Length: 137
Image (cartoon, rainbow, N blue to C red):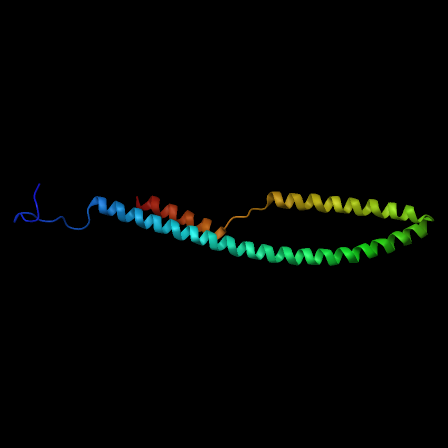
């Protein structure tokens, strides 16, 4: 093997294959770290929005529930007076409200099952990066 002291020695031009592989590994690692940070940022942002919306929904639901409760009581009394039995009015209206509540729960469960919670931008970026890496190798 020739050494640098040897007057005939000529160092290879450019980086060696090992250096290229090491550089590629560092760049891919850096890229993956950036993508992971993007995913974290996206998920934090989405979580903040979901929490804010959940608080608003909860507060609104409590207020709406109080209002609806008063309306239901008034309606049950009115129906009871109309049918000649206040307990009958409460029973009729209770059945209608229970049916509506069951339908709302069923619709909500169906919506949750079909929904996806994925960081869309991160997924798009990762797909693009995978395609680029395949193309480069």
